Length: 115
Length: 116
Picture (cartoon, rainbow over the protein chains, first blue to last red):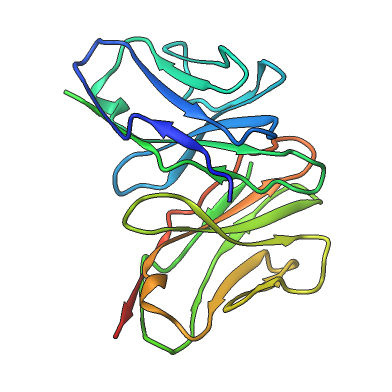
């Protein structure tokens, strides 16, 4: 079965540094998403992306976050100046977005640790 | 705004037995979907089952089935013949059709343990 691929699986960074989390969605999917999960808490929506622009974003997704689809396969999440509270598992997901089919396929996640 | 409540932080079941995980939600949407996702220790999010709110028939996927009560806004997951591999966190999530595609609101999860 096709998979969403995320790299790296673990990322350690210093507070204030920029990080880029990378994702390769399933090739025929059109909608892309980022979610995050702080350890021991629920999974939270960050942003959805379609047709090279943000479709929707949550309150968490403030100015320090940005997303990009730099080429035909990658989908990235950039955190400009990381904070301690950004430490979390970040999940990328994609979907075909055919009407009536919102099955999201999630990647295995990138564990971000901000020191 | 949608809210999701999973009232059972932890559940335990004997292998081969049946367990039901509860979920209630609140939504202003008239058409929507409901999902159960499984998160094993690897922390990958895996879709278990999906229910369309406009369908009266409860969804079934092998050993997994739902009891969907639209009026009560209840969406419970039943796991039959539980297996050791079913041990995981289970998250309930409603999703809308028209507006927020992919903006799933997850519950806090239920940790399921399976005893051999």
